[in-house]
Length: 127
Image 1 (cartoon, rainbow, N blue to C red):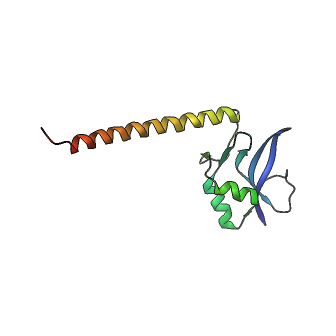
Image 2 (cartoon, rainbow, N blue to C red; image 1 turned 90 degrees about the horizontal axis):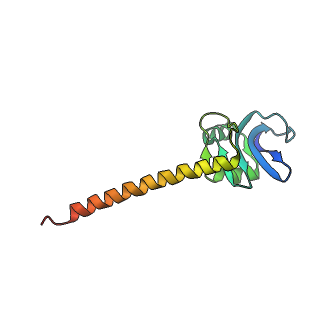
Image 3 (cartoon, rainbow, N blue to C red; image 1 turned 90 degrees about the vertical axis):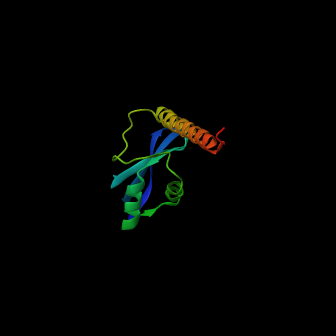
């Protein structure tokens, strides 16, 4: 039986967990069937491939209690191009994601202001 659970990585007192699919009777640090994402409890960065999680759950893989809680939350960043490879530190990745979110929100607010101005002009009586 397959299980979706976490593998501990990182340094002493600075854990980082991988969310993996693994046989139920294998040890925690055993070779996983597939790596689905990761979770950093210190920075609260959660990244996983939602499509692959749904695939494995559809096959019958049971998530652990902690992973089920994390999966229920919205991921900070969704993986769509296969397994994640660390190229930057999690803090740098988090800052990068924050910058993307801020740029998207500023674009959305600018678009909303333009729509509101256009609506105000359309509603104003022609004098």
